[in-house]
Length: 243
Ligand SMILES: [Zn+2]
Image (cartoon, rainbow, N blue to C red; front, side, top):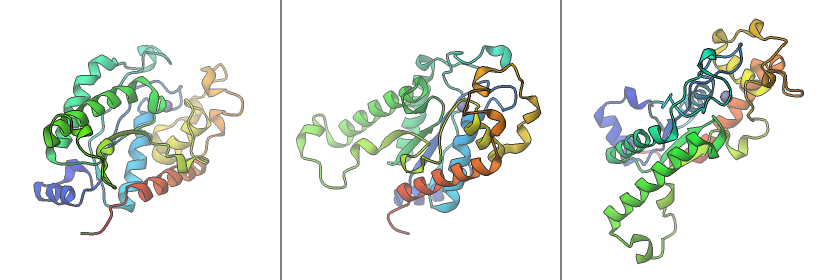
């Protein structure tokens, strides 16, 4: 279910079932001449779509703008940059909103620069601060020292920031920048937006990386990687019991 499509009673029911909420995050960044600039977000959204088709869960609206540092290109090739400190307040506000709705299993998914890059760490900081605030409010200050956690306590899992490449999905799933893997993801998820004929013999270098050539990307490879990720996440996030 997509949060944007849900009515109030459906949201209440999802919260009552403690359904997982997936929050796709990403950025707008050049991925060579052959791939769309939304590549990293599109990958996360495609995994979310496949997981939502397998299990009951909620997919929150995507956060499309994120830090790139202009590491890969400048704006002349389509890259945008929102600095971590500019994003932090928004991330906090948005995650706080999901907590206030009542969700207690929020999983932020990132592909861009993995789970330790500037984008992910911004959401890590926002999430961990919010969980502290929540626990102080619900259990009182000193909450962590007050009582030994009981089995099944998911306090620190209320908000998680994770690489969408689930550990159980790799291999075959993997990353790169606009190379074999990302080209394959895009061919599988949004082929009409890929132009393999736009690949150039003079680079950028990351499209010509030996053993990771963009031109070797295939929709079949992308499909395999997406299915591995979707299966691993569906297993982890499946609700405990049907209502
Ligand atoms: Zn990418």
